[in-house]
Image 1 (spheres, rainbow, N blue to C red):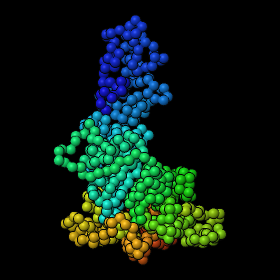
Image 2: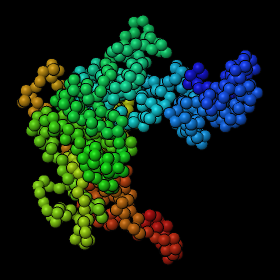
Image 3: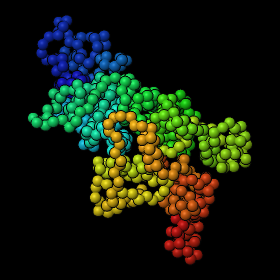
Image 4: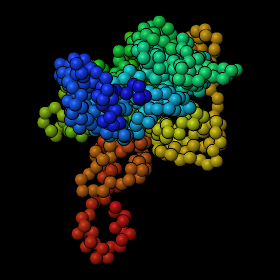
Length: 617
């Protein structure tokens, strides 16, 4: 924040506060009386200099909050809607009423590395941030959505990289692609697409807010990208003579539903603040056949079973808190996407579904036609969930009386306990959440563009898609000296992957035979469908027994003849086709009793060696 834009209540010394009124010289109104610069006239009437000096010192200066050599004095002006005493933050200019709250607010700035110096440099009010080779300007309060329009979340970096990799895979199938970032904010996602994929994509960045559109155009100039209708801001230097822009990005200012109704796109990304259900109908109305729609939902409060009434209102689903609540959230969002596509006579193929701490990301491929829509609608089913043991199973289609519902559960809780032991959840997406072939090509794109942070997650997703603990595949673009083993995935780096078949780029609609052949090819990429949901090894641990290590337990389940893998939804989760009873039997078989300190001491005295004691641990 520059000195000229700093509020008058922020001063380095008491003398600086007194110079606002010039107590030592000049005459004020009413025969030498002067008004306080930090109080309204009705609160503190004009007075002589000696009285005003005591007022500034005892009321405003005495209760200051210090930060980096600057003192934030208390202010009584009408800077807030509620006329109350407050402080002005020296970093982000927000107004806070209480001194203790201001101190806590400044501590959060320090913990995030945000100081007044971080906003100085090339711009007085902007911070320059670089991600994946793309520079963007950020407002000082960019991480507070209630205080800024150009919101930017650093924790969503994984989300942006996953979306980029999915677009890079589609760009290999056909180009040029017309891509839309419907909620641009700072424009970083669309600028990353344009800067790295160049001529393979035609990027449109949209936002309804005027401040965001201005920020996006400035960020285009910052990355030497021509933004249609944008000019190089005064703070930034123009490119040297003879230096052409990297590419062109179209920046629009309109409602997201409007632009998706007006123009067709090959790739659409929706990342609104909260739920995206209000924009799904418009997205599927005009998306091209075999295009991709990626949806990011950040309303984790309703999706993670914290606000059940909001979940029912937004998604039309009945859910409860379960051990597999993150996968349940992914299937809730996918079900909403499938219903929106079916209303437009389109079907979807789920390519990727990720649910992490801050967001739920679902990427689907659009398949045009009522037949595809009917096939998609058939995968929306109710889930029967046992509230005692947390066993679960999707209900078969058809009308059944309540007495026969419990018979579909593998557990026997309903026969040994009175009352209603199970609840009916949904409707949910019952199909697969991953496409192995698409994920393999996403990993190739992540390696080619040096996205080291997202590669372990993609490898875990590949294992989860095939429900296996060990998977071998190739990565092109880089020649690594040794094989990498990470998350149970072995990468053979010296082999080559066959290039994707080219698709007709003439822009004409394909015939039914050609389109059907491509759909069959895309479906062949998906391997045997993975089991739905997972079990938490800690949730089903046995009291008084020491569990085996998770990797060892996966090996035991595999040796028992079950498909098994880890899951990104839960670090302690196990995805397997075994029932809960079979899962617990293997866990019980390889668990050992927990010995107390006295027992273990006595056992050593009776000739048990230390090595034998370590085996039990």
